[in-house]
Every structure is written in structure tokens, then in C-alpha cells.
Image (cartoon, rainbow, N blue to C red; front, side, top):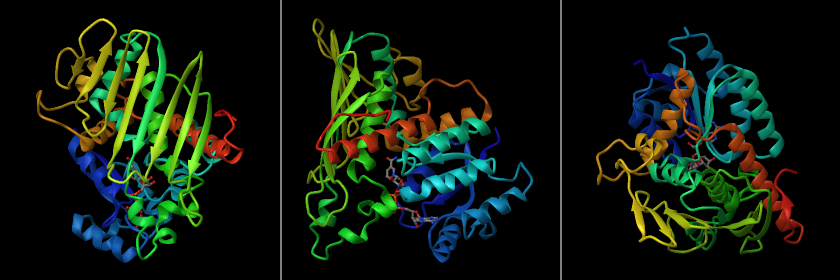
Length: 379
Ligand SMILES: NC(=O)c1ccc[n+]([C@@H]2O[C@H](COP(=O)([O-])OP(=O)(O)OC[C@H]3O[C@@H](n4cnc5c(N)ncnc54)[C@H](O)[C@@H]3O)[C@@H](O)[C@H]2O)c1
């Protein structure tokens, strides 16, 4: 099978998530990185291209040049899809240009800075009939997919409570450092990050996961955010109450100041007959507790799992897979979509999930600003 040629914007030397995308693309074995704009600094971008053995002629100085030069290549040589792994404010302008020029897009979260931009991208994706994947990576884990299937098949009965938590501690190293790095780090600077810090960065993953596994949409939120210090512009911690309608309620707790926490994303969905809990740091274990049976642990690579979960794991039972494989599963979904293959609902997060995420972030900030009031997510 011919590999899909892809490009990358951002993700150069020392960048965090671009490297994970490249590993995931290599793992799923359907993609070949052929060029990009890897760094804000062109010299460093070229240095990266040399390191990765990418032709310097396809290491471009800007996204405009990338589009112009790639479109001059024969169709079978040209990149088909471009991955955007830059700071948040650049997602929208780059995605818009690429979609308008006929490229499929894989984009990091949060999708845009405003709800209006998100809605504009959604219309563009529909108009151009292109693939747009938003990398809420956690939806790629086999046991998250199993959780979604078990809930939709009624194994825990009527869903009555959703509890999602995303705790990290790394922001302490920035905000309490002796050189005071608060103004120097892009994730705490609204000009590069948008209107929210922690909730926009990781709260939105918890929100996406809650909607993904339950198949239900949050209708209203009430939030209480914390910037911790006067001089910090954006939230570094927060709690959000959720109303889904039909008496289903829940909570998202997100924080980047929980010293000692690493990447503790956990979700519990509680129903009338039982509950399911999953935690990202031990992703191969999904726990089912019921009112009547002993506790069950689901693990990948067993025939008792549904089809979708089983297709999302490649090794035999007992060989743990993790973050890279979950991201690779999103890339598999993108390949299927680009090649017009049969695709499962939930195979990759879409532009519609991106719109939901931006509405969530804006409603959360709005709720906090208006004295912790209930705000409709669809405003
Ligand atoms: N899905 C996830 O779990 C996950 C995890 C981490 C980060 N992210 C998201 O990924 C994005 C990048 O985060 P990161 O932590 O990798 O950031 P980073 O600071 O480590 O890397 C950003 C990269 O973008 C490049 N860049 C900046 N401006 C550019 C421009 N104009 N043109 C080309 N390249 C440019 C930088 O040079 C750098 O290589 C963010 O939107 C973040 O929210 C997602």
C-alpha cells in the first residue's frame, strides 16, 4: 500500500508533541513525512530537516511557501495531509489556508482561539469535503473505546453521573521558579494560548473524553477557576460542574498545580446498574463494578472486548501499549477517511468535536467571569 505523504507545521527540535505525532505516524505505518515548516526559526527548521533526512527543498520558510511549492508538485508527490503542532493561536490561520488549498489537516487541540473561528473551520471542512482530525489522543486508547461501547450497550444501565479529572503538577516549576518564568512561557500567555490556561489545555481533553465515552453532550457549565497569583493571566486550576440534561450531572476537575501529579487523567461514569472507571496512567485496565457481580477488569487483546477496542490494539495480550499507539490509532482513522475506507464512529475526533471544545472553553471562562453562573454551552 502506498504511504500517504504528510507535512508538519511546528514540531521541530525540542518541541514536545510533534515528536509524538511522528512516532505515531511511523507506528501506524501508513504515512511518510516529506516536508514542513518545523520551527518558527527557519535555521532551526533546516537543522531539524537535516537531522530527519528530509529534503531541504521541502523545508519551507513559511506556510504560504509550503502551499505554493507543494501545489506545483505532481499530485502523487505532493503532501496530502498536514499536521499542525504549533502553539494554539496559529492552529486556525494555518488550518484555514491549508483547507482552502485542498490539503487534509490533522490539528492539535484546542482547535482554535474563538468559537467563531471553530465554526468557520467546521463550515470549510464540510464545504471542501476534506478530512480534519483533532488529536484528542485519549480517544485512541483501546479501553476508552471499550468503555464507550459498554456504556452504549447498556452494561451500566442509565448513566447518572460523570466524573472526570485531569491533574498535572508541572506549572509549579514555572510559577514558583526563582527566575520567575511566568511571562516567558507561551502556555500562560493569552496572546499565544487563548482565553484559558489549564482548562483550555487539559480541561478540554477531559470534556472531550466525557462526551466521547457517554455519547452525551454537556448542555450547561458552572466553573470556578484559579490563577493562583495576581501576576498570572490565565487559569492554572479549576473545577467545572456539568449539566447534560435529563438529570444527568457531572464534574470536571482540572489542575496543573497539583505538585507530584504527572498526567493523571481519569474518568468515572456511574450508572443505575454499575460504573466504569479508566485512568490514563494505567490505560490497559478498565474497571467495571456492578450492584450484583464481582468486580471485572477489562484488558486489551481479549475476545471478550468489542470489535472496535480489539482493532485498536496490535500486540498479543499482556504486552502493554500506550500513548504512541493511541495517537497512532487516530492516524489510522485519518488514513481510512482519506482513502475512503469504511470507518467506525469515533475513529478519530473531528472538527465538530473541535467546535464543542471551543464552546466548552468559552462557556467555562464566561461562567467564572460572571460570578460562577450557569452558562449554556451552545451560546
Ligand atoms: N494532544 C495532546 O495530548 C497534546 C499534548 C501536548 C501539546 N498539545 C498541543 O500541541 C500544540 C503544541 O504544543 P507543544 O507542547 O508541542 O509546544 P512546543 O512549544 O513544544 O512546540 C511548538 C513548536 O511550534 C513551532 N512554531 C511556533 N511558531 C511557529 C510558526 N509560526 N511556524 C512554524 N512553527 C512554529 C515552535 O518552533 C515549536 O517547534 C499546542 O497547541 C498544545 O496544546 C497537545
